[in-house]
Amino acid sequence: MAKMKWKHELDRRHHQVVLSGQHVAIHCHHYNINLQKTLEDTLGHAGTAIIYQAAEEAAFQGLEPLLEQYQGLKTIKSKLEMCSIWYQNCGLGIIHLQDLETGTGYAVSSDSHHVTGWLAKHGCRNTPGCHFTCGWLAGAMACVFGKPAGTYMVKEIKCKMMRDPDCIFQIGAH
Amino acid sequence: MAIDGEKIVQAVMEGSRIRESRGIIPLFGVYLSIFSTQYYNRINFDFEKRIKEVQGIKAAELLIQAAQECGYTTFQGVRNSWEWDEIVQPMIERKEDQLMGFVQVAVAFGWGDLQVQKLIPGSDLVIRVGDSYEAKGYVELNGIADTGKCYMLRGVTGAFMDLLYGEGYPEGCFTFSATEPLCRAKGDPYCEFVARKSLR
Image 1 (tube, rainbow over the protein chains, first blue to last red):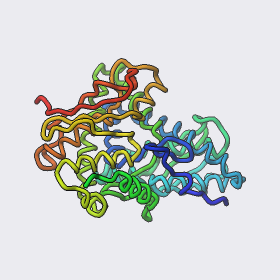
Image 2: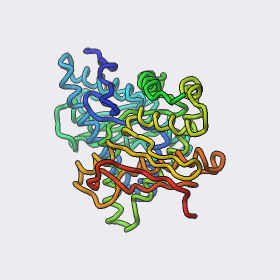
Image 3: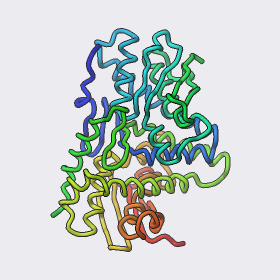
């Protein structure tokens, strides 16, 4: 598969940080988790939906030009691999997408920024908490399969924030 | 010795390319992630829209509070990290240099072209930002605003003063609070943040 040139992809344009041409910001777990908690505590499900949709949209718009740029990525498998690498390089964690070649199935994450951050700040919780990753997966899947954003629906069925050994995401089409 | 922002930017760019086996970027005492500014803008401004419709309370206040608390904890971690000891501490000669170090870390994180305009120790801090991603993002999503929209930078400006002149950590958070009298989202030429002691 084509190798991602991360040093080239992550760069600066004066004071801005850019990733594959997209304007990005570096934030820490305190901010990401504080935002999540503020939205969840204030709006409940509507708050988690905002996180999901924002992550879906941003992942789609970030990954679409990246996958186009690497012409060597011909197969679904190699595109899924590239998405995993991108996720990891962004410090978001480890995500295994290899069982999604048909477009539906399960993704497994053994570690993530949001899980590590949530557990460090708030400890375990009783409901799945990886709303960001659910949205990110929905956006990534749409990119990989050449569908519009919003095509895929992702639900977290096991979550490390709830003491499960891994986070497991169920992916299907709407 | 003045704070060399370029050194800090370099350290952040190099450090953010290194991640440990869990796919996490531990740098300057915190876990970092790199993600689109569009994501943060969507979250802030969709939340604001939604909460106005639902509860009629000010979303802005909640978002500024979340950012100030985060800025307070984050930069406490930053100034206690080995990277800070190694790179920034040798450039610090007086207490106020610490603030310049914080500002350069924020610039390195891609939060904007922050510049300290005025610092009266223990009293006032004015930070100017010509290119805040929050202001730019607001205008792109919603058009011209009637109030300042840089909630993250506003909270962080307050947090910088809390860490320098508030009570010892963790008691000093919200000793200061910031306003944003000028914002590019309102059509001003730049965004400006003014932190002063909170009225409480």
